[in-house]
Length: 263
Image (cartoon, rainbow, N blue to C red):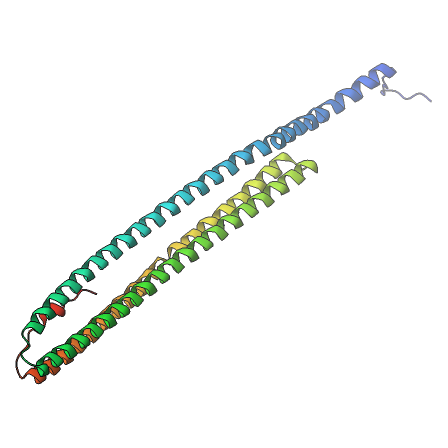
């Protein structure tokens, strides 16, 4: 039977091979391109993350420098205030001794000398009590400040450590994906997203710490109240000692030189 209108071309083996080659060539080229992109990205991964690590180390170095600077400032302020306090107390002690030397020189009999001696002992006790209370208030304040500094340092260090851990986990994930021949675009997007999350957590941790800066307010208020109480107790003790002396001497006695406000 003859079939008209149908033409079936006759192809040689060489022609068939050529057609097959033409059909698969675009796919092979695409695969090769993807492999090149993956290799380029994965080969640059270590170098890129090395730069990121270097920046982190530089920031840590700056942080340590700032910590040292703040510590030096606090130490210098402490030393200056201690020196000033010691100077004021030395002046007060000198005035105290001069005042009582003059008062004792005016004693005309044993009764007056005993009354002045009792007054002097009461004043010394009041001065010592005020200094002890003031020293305790200062020490409590400084301990509180140091505790706040240590707490913040620990929190910052923990935040940085968490960031570095997350960063390393993201890098290891990218390396594993490279070894598993995951699409380089996917690897890059996953890595960027992980690093963004890590940085976001670090920023949030820092912001949370900044909101706690008012920790100093209660320390300052507590110190102020302690100092005010120490001064109030001192004034009450001085007033009592003055009244006892006046009663013993039967006259008005001036004691302003020994009742100053120096702690």
